[in-house]
Figure 1: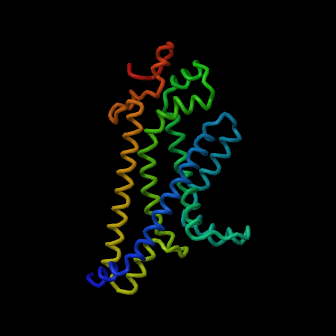
Figure 2: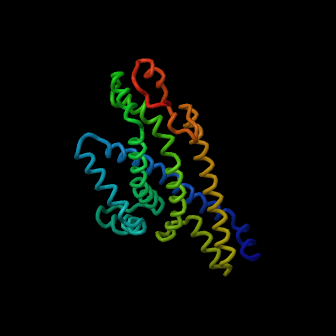
Figure 3: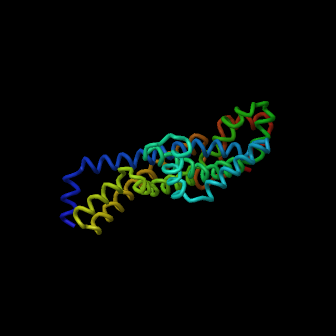
Amino acid sequence: MGDFLTYFFDHLPDVWSGLGVTVAATLLGSALALALSFVFGFMANARLAVARGTSRVIVEFFRGTSLYVQLFWLYYAFPILVGYEMSPLVCGVVAFGINYGAYGSEVVRGALNAVPKAQWEAAVALNMTPAQRMRRVILPQAWPQMIPPFNNLLIQLLKCTPLLWLISAADLTTVVQQMRDRTGESTAAYLTLLVIYFVLAYALTLLMNALERHAKARIGGRPERRSLLRPPGAEGVAKAGVPTGGAR
């Protein structure tokens, strides 16, 4: 184990480089996944049957097929079809984003549907446009409910980044694997990977917990009293004599 640690600290620039690839794949993949989550989530709640059907087909396809196969298809088959080859990191970001965006869309759809119907009706009664209803009333209440499942998906995405090793991306797992091959220290190498990934996952969890507290503070909500969540401007809705779905 001592030989591996010595080799590890002697080659810290390589470790930082691999860690940078892992973090970049996680952050960029999660950003793409978040965007697609809202796109497909909104489409799933659209009035047009075509939009709902399109969203359902796309979501079920990417949820029902393996991320492993999607990654290989994008890296090996896609260039043959279109004549354009993506870099391993870009390929990983696209694969992670589409796959976890499909799962995230169900989070968005469920959170939007969980907002009390009275809130939707109150916003309509105040003659708000669809965009205003979503931005000022619905999303402020739905967003805090999305964050915990989004946190789970983010951690799962982080733990899938070692798949980049399969398409020759020089991520953290690749770097440590190369160190393990040179030193022959399997136990120390994989223990080091476990510790690093745990630290990364814990840091992301702390960040998401802080984001959840901030989101709830903006609408005066408490973790143990979700039924009392009110959106900004809910007081105005109540003064207008329209039910807000708040505390009874």
